[in-house]
Image (cartoon, rainbow, N blue to C red; front, side, top):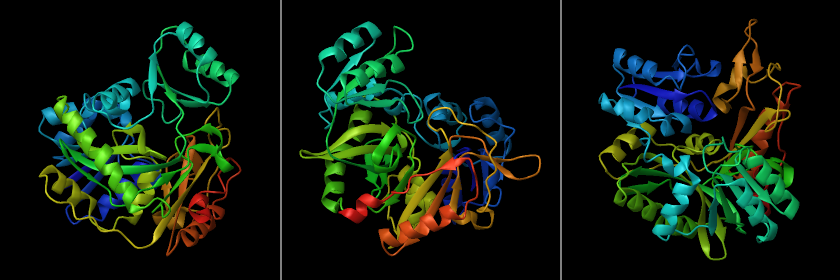
Length: 415
């Protein structure tokens, strides 16, 4: 089958690498892709991932059988709808169903209606009202921008002043929609779930992301500074509870409300004293969780997509090895950062690096082009061994423009 991946980041790099291994995939294209993907796919940097008409024309002209959409933006803007109208098979929910990620308020209302465990919340659509609310609300308080924010639209305010500052940040205008949530205590984890209507099949292993920019979970939220799997201190019983209380109910809720969901549903969960609760849903693979999970997945991803389409059993096979991924990001990220810093040292071992923000310059050298730049992957027979290997690969990268956390996966070692 001719398969097309949409996106240019590390998640799409990992998806493309995994699809390249499939017995079902005969040719692989990526739009727009990045310069590190050229060994595994034909990239098309001349087409933007938001140019839906150009993508449709490409898929038609090249007789593409399946399109796999990586990022959230094309999903929430309706690329699936456009391709499906031309009878092109798409792995990724349509625009209406992608609201589960595109609108925090939509997701919270759906969870409230179907009694899916999550934090108590209040939706406030004016800055004036928000400033009044944070004057005497319970602290800490979590503020979430309603729409997409590339993983950076969440602020946890520990003090009254931080809450006021957060309102200023998330309300650039008087009329904005922000969700205010009760802060949940517990340990966060990520579950990817194959969903086709009411048929939901979670991955049989979970991952843990590291959202904060700096060691010991300090600093601002980012799109993710590293991840690892499995998560040995969060047991099979928690995955079972997450499936029973969250994955299956949300799939049934979406179908009952008339939303045609086909794709991956990311469950960002937290293990509280009352059991697992939802922090957020994404309508696609998480990043960088996808990179570590797909590295650990031994079975055929494309075959699983075909099984999902037919609502057949999905027989997952996973490597025994643990996987740890460490993100190197541009200095300054997630705030302002410079581009154009030289990065080298990884080029001969691309199987163990997933690129998010690099491009070749006029001299064919790799230079930074984004905030999160490259994820170094380590595998081993334990989390400790995988972590050691990941950081060995981090040290092989040469650049003056990058920083990284030095404690990815430490939680698994302390438990």
